Image (cartoon, rainbow, N blue to C red):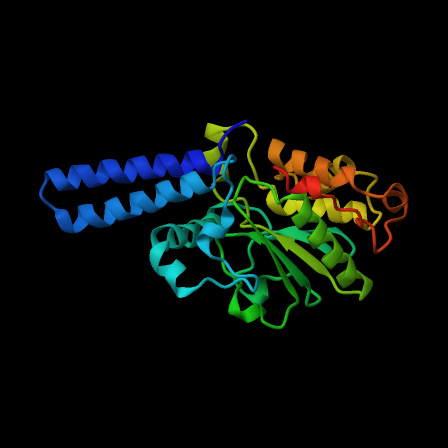
Length: 271
């Protein structure tokens, strides 16, 4: 299993450190010191996003989707890079921001403004830990499931998201599940065949099962791929979904009742 974002950001850290060493050799310390700092932050993110650690709370994203001032200051080299990368990718990638998978259920990328949301004033499930909730979405119901890119939500997080989304749908509210829009995809594919565009898809698979629209998460994945071919969950996403599925009530699997995923066991947290 590849390292995904951890490997990519680690390579970025090495490149920044090499550039800092180069400029230091030229005596241009005003450039070398910021590069050294950016390299240190990139290495910290690389370590925190490694599958063995998986600590999205490092960036400090709050449950309301905001970042504290200290995070913007400390992690500015990483957070600003992410913003620029995501916005740039939208200019070069010919893919719709979101796709309706079933009636009132959407999956896609980070909505930087309310104009980029699906129609119907949807409730939003945010699967990113590195992008803020836009201030223009203040009137939309919102749930944050903070997860690193190329990593998977924990089964308990999937459960929380499913319960929340089912309640929204029971009120006839559209639901939009998003990640960052598959950032890093074109670079990651060069490094690892098991990567990404998968955080939001992972949650969406569980939701489709919960709503009774798919028999299991594998059928749900195929259902999503038919509508949005660019998705590609990795082994971490599938493992988390498999763990989540083990605790589904058999009757809930068949009927898609609102209490569909009512059994969560402590072994979710033993790891």
